[in-house]
Amino acid sequence: MSGRAGARFLGRPGLATLDPGSGKAASATLRATLPNGMTVVVRESAGAPVVALTLFVGVGSRDETAERNGVTALLGRTLLKGTRTRSALEVAQAAEDAGGVLESATDQEYSELRARGLGRHWPALLALLHEVATSPGLAATEVERERQALLAQIRGLDDQPFQVANRLLSRALYGTHPYALSAAGELASVTRLGGDDLRGHFETFYTPDRMVLAVSGQVAGEAVLREAAEAFRGSARGATAGALPPPPARPVTPGVREIRSTQQTHLLVGFLAPPLGHPDYVPLKVLTAVLGSGMSSRLFRALRDEAGLAYAVGAFYPTRRETSRLVLHIGTAPAHVTEAEAGLQREVARLREEPVPGEELERAKTFLTGSFALDLRTNARQTFYRGFFELMGVGHDYLARYAAEIEAVTAADLERVARRYLTESSTAVVGPD
Image (cartoon, rainbow, N blue to C red):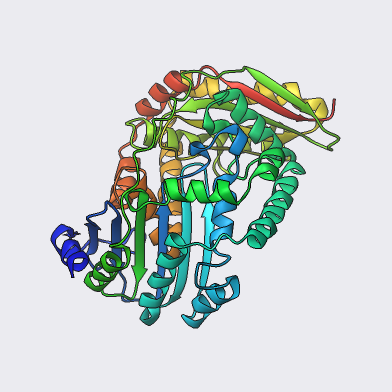
């Protein structure tokens, strides 16, 4: 068959490598680009008799407008609730018959359909993923049911002061750029969405050239490539999507505050930061670990242990395809907000002005590489990272390169990126007046 031949011709086998974190030899990872533009990555694992499949689609809230914010999330939920030939119950039963489960998730950058089950049932799970991803039912009753569930989720997020502050900070940093939009959507926008919106979004973005299928488990790689090519051979490339506006070069608004009747105040300080693949991405990951990852980080020790200012404190740096953000956060008593913000800025200034001592740098690098290796222990996480890195343009083998790039970071690198990126900031505060 033509689809199968295409997979063999375009398949690019990788060399046997070491599984990150295990130190054991892994089977070769196979990668193929199908004639319709879809990418397939298969990792053979002779461990437990299970398999995980993740189908990534390159669509998220970054592809939405404020008026239709939440359409990706609502579509992702509704895809599991029936196809043109199966009901929601029949879809769930098909996954259970393979000894597993079918799930979905959405983010700013991507949408996921995930299947897990017994390794010997991988053909059934692959067929189910294909059916859900290419022929959704989108029945009106299911759309409405999932809309109500999504609205409940959004209300729940609005009851969490940290989430409110994070949303406010995104708007302060990005302004009207789609990165300011919530991945779940807003109450008003989700309420307006209908079946036609979901169908249009599906037809525009759920195309094979936007898809990456990652498989890990007790499977034969070549067989998976052939079956994936056969399953998706009838799917045509989509139209080229219009270019998104570039993110702002500097924070749009210096500060924003929302008054809430809370016992503590949530304070977030954000800086615009480079995307995945940028030469400064990994140094800033290490810098983030120095600042706010774990109980030995600077923010934890200085603001919680020593100054007693924090209920919770830390830092995070999401991985994005375009300009990301590095965020410092602290939960503190309302009377200590000014002192807490000064403490955050003081620790940032130290990074710009003083080299990080060698022992502290090594501790941060070990924390990053160790937590990443631990996160890769399951087939599900193997499929996530391999598919995610393919979708983001750095390749599935970035798993093997990431640890080496972390180890190469120096104290001079940290001082350089701190001076370059930790300058202009936006601040979001949520708490009592």
